[in-house]
Image (cartoon, rainbow, N blue to C red; front, side, top):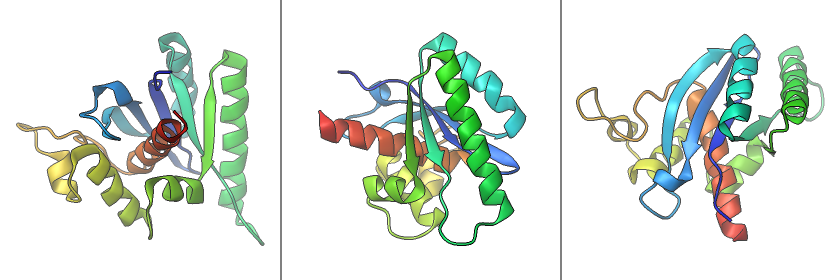
Length: 168
């Protein structure tokens, strides 16, 4: 079973990270490339989901999770996740949902967001250097243009790819 093209989403209260991962363009192993990364306002998610349904993409979504007393922004993000899930269902999109700890576990990451970004760079560009993974305008790396929350969105997609490859 081939691993699908993924629309990866890291939902947030103000901005949401989106990345498109194509595992078939990689150099082998768990190397994949990011296409059209962006850090988008939430109200554009609907357009991305419609485009994914037309393009035959599968959605990889990071689920909000909390323990104990929950801050309002976590509740708002959880509502957004539910909205995305419902929209995917209505459009007939397949969806993989992972919580942050599942993403970190699948990618074997210890630490915070900087460690996640470094691991994404390592997987995608065989380097732990974010600068080398991004490259430059004249010499684009596989993470070129990846900014903000799109790093975490890419991590969600890479975690789905890693889990799917382990199950093959």
